[in-house]
Image (cartoon, rainbow, N blue to C red; front, side):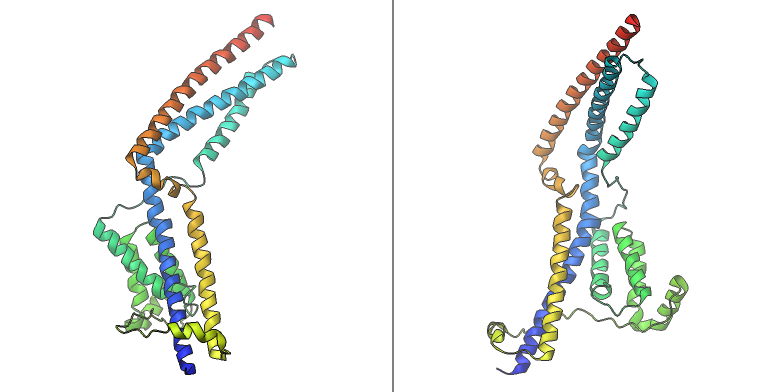
Length: 304
């Protein structure tokens, strides 16, 4: 087998690893910027608002329990009950507990797009990721890196008009590079640099079968060129593993964990019934605790 066969096979392996990584970048961003906000909005519309009411009521029960314990401690120590001071401490606890219940992600508003507009948004972003992702194109100028960040922000906000503008600025390099560089110079204050943009190789109509080369390659000592290709392939695979781990971590958090339930109307209704039961129980507990606290304070006042 000729040595150039191994080189061609390795080039194909590198291209495949590169294309797989590009596809993963797009999937990750779609998961984070499109699917996540959609799930969050759907959850809030179907369940979230009512769930917030239930959680707030349960928090009040916990706070009343704390207040009752503070009052009992004062009674045990034969100290005067400073209800104003206790309520101030309870308010601090209330703010902390509400922040914890809200979690790190506050509800966000995103633009509503038609199905056609959503498809266009996805296609524009796919093209930008393929040709201008900084990790895949280290030769990009700082100006283009910043424009890529603007593309990510527009994609996150589902701002189709903004993404169209960034797409036009990025892809006009080939036809009107000088004008684009002048515009980037004006917008971002960067010096002019030559930008080399490589497209992802397209699938050919007839593809050579390199399976035999892959099977026997291990028996040959690699050339310097082949070793370099192997290293490049390894780097792509490492990045692929990292992105896949990021996506897996994402899927284990809200709102992605709610996707299965939201897809099943029976599960949604069952959870709503559970929330109604929790709310009913919390209201009963709150009312009982309020009466017990009033009774404790009144007994101290009578015997004081």
